[in-house]
Image (cartoon, rainbow, N blue to C red; front, side):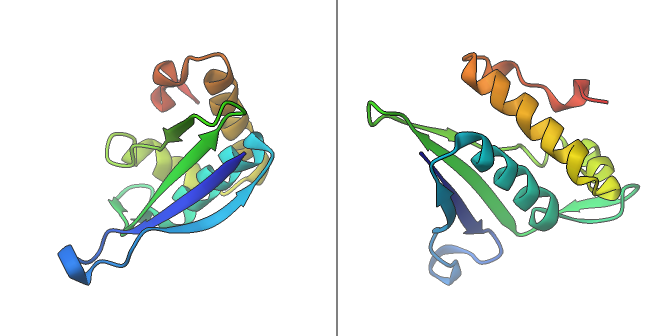
Length: 120
């Protein structure tokens, strides 16, 4: 079971909108696809040559059958240029492939080893 949380990072303190559930569902792989799609569409702006972080942050929350939750996010600052290059392609099959690879790492308890800079 997953839910995708949206956080508007534009405002400060009380001016900031509360975090909200953007979408949810039972298929965790679908959650990873939604995370990647949302990050690429809303968490960065600019061009592939001059990307800028946007004002939206997304966190995928996966809840296991034991009730424990794990939060997964994509570090847009660390991978800004890699994400911008992927976004410039906006190839849904390619993005689905990256999301699937990220999901496989997660399922094998290797999420911390998933390194976007190694994806070409």
